[in-house]
Amino acid sequence: MIATELERRFGDPWDSGNPTGHAAVLAADERGETFAAGEQVLDAVGLNAEFVPVDLGGRLARLDHLIQVMRPVFRRDPALGLGYGVSSLIAAVNVWAAGDASQRRRVADLLLAGGRVAAGYHELAHGNDFAGNDLSALPGPDGVLRLNGRKEVIANAGRAEAMVLFARTSSEPGSRSHSQLLAERADLPAGAFRDLPRFPTSGMRGVQLGGLEFRDCPVPADAVLGVPGHGVETALRSFQITRTVLPAMATGILEAGLDVTARFVDARMLYGRSLADMPHIRSILADAFVDLLICECLATVTARSVHLLPDETSLYASASKYFIATLLTDAVYELSRVLGAQFYLRDGEYGIFQKHLRDLPPASFGHSARATCLGTVLPQLPRLARKAWRGGDAPPSEVYRPGGPLPPLSFDRLTLSSGGRDSHSAALTAALDAPDVPADLRRHLLVAANELGTLGLECAALAPRDLTVDAPPEVLELPARYAAVLAATACVNVWLHSRDRSEGFLADPQWVTAALRRIAGRLGRDPGPRPRHHDEALAAEVLARHRRGGGFGLFGL
Image (cartoon, rainbow, N blue to C red; front, side):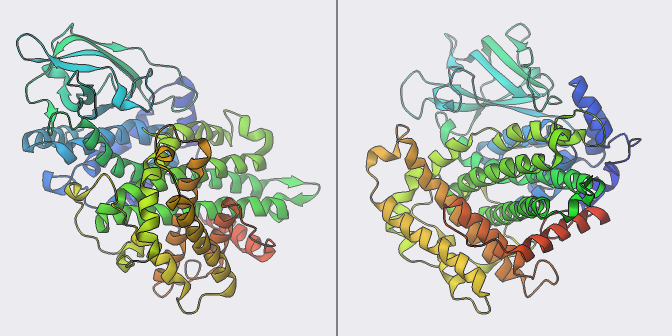
């Protein structure tokens, strides 16, 4: 398995002499340089093949496997994960989704040969409103498309052999005025474009962020991806893939934070007592651990839904992106409280923590902000309230079985809206009737089910003006609450469908009860007294995994 091979090649992160250990990662970050030794490891395992579909000679067959491969990369160095591969993935999925056979072949060959593709969506003047971008690719007097304008803050802009650019291809207003273009540097005439300098950043300092400026730059006739004017649709379909996998990969950052914090706790004494024995410290460890498990359940279910429920993925991908990014950010900041002043230090034994803390926001942000994801879910809620949440069929059980078989990944089946379908809501209702569910877990599960019922009433009453970009801020609480319910559904169903096939920690209902308790708190519901024995057991699990060098996910890989 590639993930296991990566861990072996990366070696012990705590070994100061390891060229790919924490000390080396920190040194590269302080210099603001790409982590060259890490890139050599990724070259050696041919990581780019993970981003190329199997039918084009790559290894991209399942999104859950892609996430498993990339988590250890982000755990070691988020800038390596984003700068080496994910930036190419963000660009390439548009080619897999809309490109013709020739375009797909060219990009596949480029990546399989170790090359890079850059994604040029956003412009600083327009932020997340990429449909308002000014970069144009309009026909000149000779009928040839000519690029004019600029794109800033593009990962690998200066060293990518090809780029996918979102550009205006019509001067007419409306949603069909933009297209995506695949342009290769070798095809662009010298002097018609120039590289812009890197913007300084506090995080992801090892990512080569640059920009491109075009002046009457001709592009080949076959540069447009898909149907001209359908750039927005292509982007929104591709976002369903990247919004699913990027935050899931970034859970490796929280894993690293747990590892550093557990090491610190194991080594520190306060007032003559070990930090590991203090109830407050154990509760912080337990909460961060549970938040990681919530993220993994939601990420796994969302990734499997892309294969099994592709016509509903527009809903799940955006909700998942929002919720996971929120949990990761909050959990890492909570862990920083345990390290105290140590978390500020940029070197030494625990210096890696502050680097991961700085890298987390851009890693979880990716190419779309959390508010943008909520804005994608919001317009779908009234129809869900009138249709899906009033009853429906539960999804196939395979969607909740981590590691189980999956049908091929199909970009063609991704839709821009779920069309009022939400199979997971039926699975939440079914979970209430599952046998042998402990009373405490059932109580928290009922909170999530009641929340869905309340959401149904509130969403059905939304006015059309509440569904636009001018919606009042409080309306965005509705998709945020839906995301929490989806997370609860994912957690309880992963446990229900894994308990008979697992033993030990995963089969124990303690972790999923704690997970639903945490989610109830995020929904503003009183989860009741905090069970101390849960904190003790979960914190002990964190410390045990750290001591044996295991991972902190569901399966401890």
